[in-house]
Length: 422
Ligand code: UD1
Image (cartoon, rainbow, N blue to C red; front, side, top):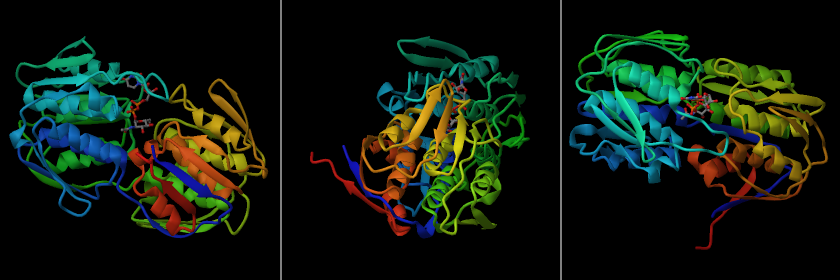
């Protein structure tokens, strides 16, 4: 397994280009299953999770053309299987996103149950119940969700009692081809859901209300070929901005979107950063200062994202003052904190709340990446604190960050990939 070797004590400065959002690219690839003919997707990030999703649809006979620069074209004309096997789903839970589109377009789908994951139990009951409300017959047997529908799915009113991002996306895609009107209540408002809706609209879907908690979809009989550019990754943007803040540095993120970043930018300002932005860039300047500790409570968009919790925990470890971090989305998302403690972080965990006392005494140490965002937070901490850090299991980070070491090197970070020997 590859590792990162990081020499800390650096102040970050310079410019970094942000990639397309992983969490928008994945549902948009799945949306390609709804089209008769090609869907061309631009600003596609080069990530392991994207490769897994493309491999998954290729295994169904879908043609995938990756010859363009940051561009992928998928075409369902040659599809011959409607199955998402365990071997692929177990490596990426977001594979569940093919369930709605396969069922809506082809009347059948067989998707492995995702099972447990490092950050909590993460069930998919809401996806299943939503599709059942639209008339699908679903059985869960032998570890698989087997869904069938005779004819088109039927529009329905679906109320999610928990806000679910991929659940909203699955129902949104299924509803696009259903007969009649679907109303999704308590829908996820994440910008990646809105981006998916825009892609579906460019394919001929009739959708209103995306980005609010009520989405209305008037189903159409078929969707046509289209081209769509993936929204910039707000989590990658936030990760670089927080890393700069931790180092007392000054950087500019480009090809990004400040308007979908409010909660994170406000917290950075509270931490003492000077933030400036234009239509597609955000800059941060800490003017050499140590950040001030900030309290965080994660919640669905537009509130503070759970996918930025670990990065702010890293910042708070170094910051001036005591902070409280409350995780309300996932039940087991503090594993990075055990590793931060190994680096000298002063953290007390009580249930879903962590209390962090900022310290200037942290040092590099051998640590282990436990999930995607947790890995990023350890890289950030390692870049800034004195000493050397070896981070094991960095395959997690490759799932969702494009060329993270090159991007940090471009900002002055001393990070190298140590290749596994076999
Ligand atoms: C998505 C994101 C992930 C992010 C998360 C929360 C993608 C590919 N992944 O994950 O990066 O951290 O949103 O913003 O977009 N739940 C149920 N039953 C369900 C579905 C969800 O109880 O059927 C619960 C989950 O256990 C969790 C909460 O709802 O506690 C939110 O999860 P959800 O929004 O569904 O997360 P994902 O879509 O898996």
